[in-house]
Length: 253
Picture 1 (cartoon, rainbow, N blue to C red):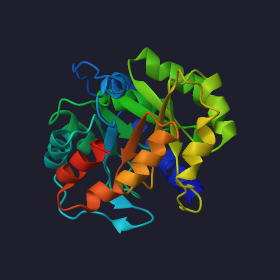
Picture 2 (picture 1 turned 180 degrees about the horizontal axis):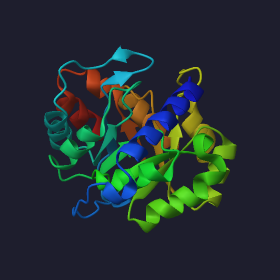
Picture 3 (picture 1 turned 120 degrees about the vertical axis):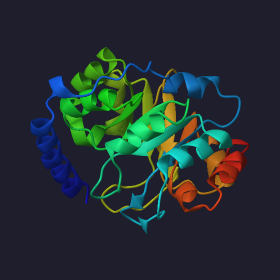
Picture 4 (picture 1 turned 30 degrees about the vertical axis):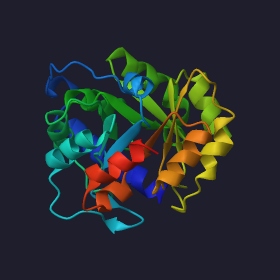
Protein backbone atom coordinates (compact mmCIF):
# COMPACT_ATOMS: atom_id res chain seq x y z
CA UNK A 1 0.00 0.00 0.00
CA UNK A 2 2.81 2.40 0.86
CA UNK A 3 4.16 2.29 -2.71
CA UNK A 4 0.73 3.24 -4.06
CA UNK A 5 0.46 6.16 -1.61
CA UNK A 6 3.94 7.46 -2.44
CA UNK A 7 3.26 7.25 -6.18
CA UNK A 8 0.07 9.28 -5.78
CA UNK A 9 1.79 11.80 -3.48
CA UNK A 10 4.54 12.38 -6.06
CA UNK A 11 1.94 13.06 -8.77
CA UNK A 12 -0.05 15.41 -6.55
CA UNK A 13 3.11 17.25 -5.47
CA UNK A 14 4.11 17.80 -9.11
CA UNK A 15 0.64 19.21 -9.78
CA UNK A 16 0.92 21.64 -6.86
CA UNK A 17 4.44 22.64 -7.91
CA UNK A 18 3.17 23.77 -11.29
CA UNK A 19 0.08 25.39 -9.82
CA UNK A 20 1.91 27.32 -7.07
CA UNK A 21 5.72 27.49 -7.55
CA UNK A 22 7.91 27.98 -4.47
CA UNK A 23 8.28 31.69 -5.22
CA UNK A 24 4.49 32.10 -5.12
CA UNK A 25 3.87 30.22 -1.87
CA UNK A 26 2.26 32.30 0.90
CA UNK A 27 4.57 33.88 3.47
CA UNK A 28 3.61 33.45 7.12
CA UNK A 29 5.25 35.56 9.80
CA UNK A 30 4.40 33.24 12.71
CA UNK A 31 7.43 32.32 14.80
CA UNK A 32 8.33 28.65 15.03
CA UNK A 33 7.05 26.75 18.07
CA UNK A 34 9.52 24.10 19.19
CA UNK A 35 8.23 20.53 19.29
CA UNK A 36 11.42 19.18 20.85
CA UNK A 37 11.28 21.87 23.51
CA UNK A 38 7.65 21.05 24.29
CA UNK A 39 8.53 17.38 24.74
CA UNK A 40 11.52 18.03 26.98
CA UNK A 41 9.70 20.65 29.07
CA UNK A 42 6.58 18.56 29.72
CA UNK A 43 5.87 17.64 33.35
CA UNK A 44 3.36 14.96 32.31
CA UNK A 45 3.40 12.33 29.55
CA UNK A 46 4.20 14.28 26.36
CA UNK A 47 1.44 13.47 23.90
CA UNK A 48 1.25 14.67 20.30
CA UNK A 49 -2.47 14.53 19.51
CA UNK A 50 -3.33 13.85 15.89
CA UNK A 51 -6.06 15.14 13.59
CA UNK A 52 -6.68 12.36 11.08
CA UNK A 53 -10.11 12.33 9.37
CA UNK A 54 -9.61 8.95 7.65
CA UNK A 55 -7.52 5.88 8.45
CA UNK A 56 -6.64 3.53 5.56
CA UNK A 57 -7.00 0.61 7.97
CA UNK A 58 -10.20 1.75 9.76
CA UNK A 59 -12.05 4.07 7.38
CA UNK A 60 -13.68 7.39 8.28
CA UNK A 61 -12.83 8.27 11.88
CA UNK A 62 -14.97 11.37 12.38
CA UNK A 63 -17.79 12.93 10.40
CA UNK A 64 -18.37 16.70 10.11
CA UNK A 65 -14.92 17.46 11.49
CA UNK A 66 -14.21 20.96 12.81
CA UNK A 67 -10.41 20.85 12.93
CA UNK A 68 -10.04 24.15 14.79
CA UNK A 69 -12.45 23.10 17.53
CA UNK A 70 -10.79 19.69 17.86
CA UNK A 71 -7.35 21.28 18.07
CA UNK A 72 -8.54 23.54 20.89
CA UNK A 73 -10.00 20.53 22.68
CA UNK A 74 -6.67 18.72 22.35
CA UNK A 75 -4.87 21.76 23.74
CA UNK A 76 -7.25 21.97 26.71
CA UNK A 77 -6.79 18.23 27.29
CA UNK A 78 -3.04 18.57 27.78
CA UNK A 79 -1.50 17.75 24.39
CA UNK A 80 2.00 19.20 23.94
CA UNK A 81 1.58 19.46 20.15
CA UNK A 82 -0.93 18.84 17.37
CA UNK A 83 -0.20 16.52 14.44
CA UNK A 84 -2.17 17.32 11.29
CA UNK A 85 -2.51 14.80 8.47
CA UNK A 86 -2.39 16.75 5.22
CA UNK A 87 -2.50 13.89 2.69
CA UNK A 88 -5.93 14.08 1.07
CA UNK A 89 -6.67 10.91 -0.93
CA UNK A 90 -5.97 8.31 1.76
CA UNK A 91 -6.26 10.30 5.01
CA UNK A 92 -8.74 13.06 4.19
CA UNK A 93 -6.33 15.80 5.23
CA UNK A 94 -5.48 19.17 3.72
CA UNK A 95 -3.12 22.11 3.94
CA UNK A 96 -6.15 24.22 4.83
CA UNK A 97 -6.51 22.16 8.01
CA UNK A 98 -2.87 22.88 8.84
CA UNK A 99 -3.50 26.63 8.63
CA UNK A 100 -6.70 26.40 10.67
CA UNK A 101 -4.99 24.47 13.45
CA UNK A 102 -1.99 26.81 13.57
CA UNK A 103 -4.32 29.80 13.89
CA UNK A 104 -6.43 28.13 16.61
CA UNK A 105 -3.88 26.99 19.21
CA UNK A 106 -0.61 28.06 20.79
CA UNK A 107 0.94 24.58 20.56
CA UNK A 108 3.57 23.40 18.05
CA UNK A 109 1.92 22.11 14.87
CA UNK A 110 3.39 19.03 13.18
CA UNK A 111 2.68 18.33 9.51
CA UNK A 112 2.28 14.61 8.99
CA UNK A 113 2.44 13.59 5.35
CA UNK A 114 4.55 11.58 2.93
CA UNK A 115 7.21 14.18 2.21
CA UNK A 116 9.43 13.10 -0.67
CA UNK A 117 10.24 16.39 -2.39
CA UNK A 118 11.87 19.63 -1.27
CA UNK A 119 8.82 21.53 -2.49
CA UNK A 120 6.76 19.98 0.31
CA UNK A 121 9.21 21.34 2.88
CA UNK A 122 8.91 24.90 1.60
CA UNK A 123 5.16 24.34 1.43
CA UNK A 124 5.07 23.15 5.04
CA UNK A 125 6.68 26.36 6.26
CA UNK A 126 4.40 28.45 4.05
CA UNK A 127 1.27 26.90 5.53
CA UNK A 128 2.34 27.20 9.16
CA UNK A 129 3.97 23.91 10.15
CA UNK A 130 6.52 24.07 12.95
CA UNK A 131 7.80 20.57 12.30
CA UNK A 132 7.43 17.88 9.66
CA UNK A 133 7.66 14.13 9.20
CA UNK A 134 10.27 12.44 7.03
CA UNK A 135 9.89 8.67 6.61
CA UNK A 136 13.34 7.08 6.35
CA UNK A 137 12.22 4.24 4.08
CA UNK A 138 10.51 6.66 1.68
CA UNK A 139 13.38 9.11 1.15
CA UNK A 140 16.49 6.99 1.84
CA UNK A 141 19.59 8.72 0.40
CA UNK A 142 17.73 12.05 0.18
CA UNK A 143 17.27 12.13 3.96
CA UNK A 144 20.43 14.13 4.84
CA UNK A 145 19.56 16.80 2.26
CA UNK A 146 15.89 17.06 3.25
CA UNK A 147 16.82 17.22 6.94
CA UNK A 148 19.33 19.96 6.24
CA UNK A 149 16.84 21.93 4.15
CA UNK A 150 14.16 21.73 6.84
CA UNK A 151 16.64 22.88 9.46
CA UNK A 152 17.80 25.72 7.21
CA UNK A 153 14.30 27.16 6.93
CA UNK A 154 13.56 26.68 10.62
CA UNK A 155 11.50 23.50 10.70
CA UNK A 156 12.08 20.68 13.18
CA UNK A 157 11.82 17.13 11.88
CA UNK A 158 10.76 13.73 13.14
CA UNK A 159 12.39 10.95 11.13
CA UNK A 160 10.13 7.91 11.15
CA UNK A 161 11.70 4.45 11.35
CA UNK A 162 10.54 0.84 11.25
CA UNK A 163 13.84 -1.04 11.28
CA UNK A 164 17.29 -0.83 12.82
CA UNK A 165 18.57 0.11 9.34
CA UNK A 166 16.15 3.05 9.29
CA UNK A 167 17.37 4.16 12.71
CA UNK A 168 21.00 4.05 11.60
CA UNK A 169 20.16 6.16 8.56
CA UNK A 170 18.26 8.66 10.72
CA UNK A 171 21.03 8.99 13.30
CA UNK A 172 23.80 9.16 10.69
CA UNK A 173 21.82 11.87 8.86
CA UNK A 174 21.67 14.03 11.97
CA UNK A 175 18.08 13.49 13.11
CA UNK A 176 17.36 14.89 16.58
CA UNK A 177 13.90 13.33 16.86
CA UNK A 178 13.30 9.72 15.85
CA UNK A 179 9.77 8.39 15.46
CA UNK A 180 9.15 4.67 15.68
CA UNK A 181 6.07 3.58 13.77
CA UNK A 182 4.49 0.56 15.45
CA UNK A 183 2.41 -0.02 12.30
CA UNK A 184 3.82 -1.87 9.32
CA UNK A 185 2.99 0.44 6.40
CA UNK A 186 2.64 -2.48 4.00
CA UNK A 187 0.46 -4.84 6.07
CA UNK A 188 -1.01 -2.14 8.39
CA UNK A 189 -0.50 -4.49 11.36
CA UNK A 190 0.49 -2.97 14.71
CA UNK A 191 3.09 -4.21 17.19
CA UNK A 192 3.98 -1.91 20.11
CA UNK A 193 7.01 -4.11 20.70
CA UNK A 194 8.70 -2.44 17.71
CA UNK A 195 9.37 0.64 19.87
CA UNK A 196 11.05 -1.51 22.52
CA UNK A 197 13.09 -3.36 19.88
CA UNK A 198 14.39 -0.20 18.21
CA UNK A 199 14.91 1.91 21.35
CA UNK A 200 18.24 0.18 22.01
CA UNK A 201 19.61 1.54 18.71
CA UNK A 202 18.63 5.15 19.40
CA UNK A 203 21.24 7.24 21.29
CA UNK A 204 20.09 8.76 24.58
CA UNK A 205 20.65 12.29 23.26
CA UNK A 206 17.91 11.76 20.66
CA UNK A 207 14.18 12.20 21.32
CA UNK A 208 12.23 8.97 20.73
CA UNK A 209 8.57 9.31 19.78
CA UNK A 210 6.40 6.21 19.57
CA UNK A 211 3.65 6.33 16.92
CA UNK A 212 0.60 4.24 15.96
CA UNK A 213 -1.61 1.69 17.67
CA UNK A 214 -1.65 3.41 21.07
CA UNK A 215 -5.10 2.96 22.64
CA UNK A 216 -4.82 2.82 26.42
CA UNK A 217 -2.96 4.25 29.40
CA UNK A 218 -1.39 0.79 29.76
CA UNK A 219 0.01 1.08 26.23
CA UNK A 220 1.50 4.47 27.11
CA UNK A 221 3.13 3.15 30.29
CA UNK A 222 4.63 0.26 28.32
CA UNK A 223 6.06 2.56 25.66
CA UNK A 224 7.45 5.13 28.10
CA UNK A 225 9.01 2.27 30.05
CA UNK A 226 10.51 0.96 26.81
CA UNK A 227 12.37 4.22 26.24
CA UNK A 228 9.95 6.55 24.48
CA UNK A 229 10.18 10.25 25.35
CA UNK A 230 6.76 11.02 23.85
CA UNK A 231 3.87 9.31 22.09
CA UNK A 232 1.73 10.27 19.11
CA UNK A 233 -1.94 9.29 19.38
CA UNK A 234 -4.55 9.65 16.65
CA UNK A 235 -7.24 7.07 15.98
CA UNK A 236 -8.48 6.53 19.54
CA UNK A 237 -8.85 10.30 20.02
CA UNK A 238 -10.55 10.79 16.66
CA UNK A 239 -13.10 8.11 17.56
CA UNK A 240 -13.71 9.46 21.07
CA UNK A 241 -16.85 11.49 21.83
CA UNK A 242 -14.80 13.44 24.40
CA UNK A 243 -11.22 13.53 23.10
CA UNK A 244 -10.15 16.23 25.54
CA UNK A 245 -11.19 14.13 28.53
CA UNK A 246 -9.53 11.08 26.99
CA UNK A 247 -6.32 13.05 26.65
CA UNK A 248 -6.44 14.18 30.27
CA UNK A 249 -6.37 10.51 31.32
CA UNK A 250 -3.53 9.70 28.94
CA UNK A 251 -1.21 12.52 30.04
CA UNK A 252 -1.51 11.19 33.60
CA UNK A 253 -0.62 7.61 32.57
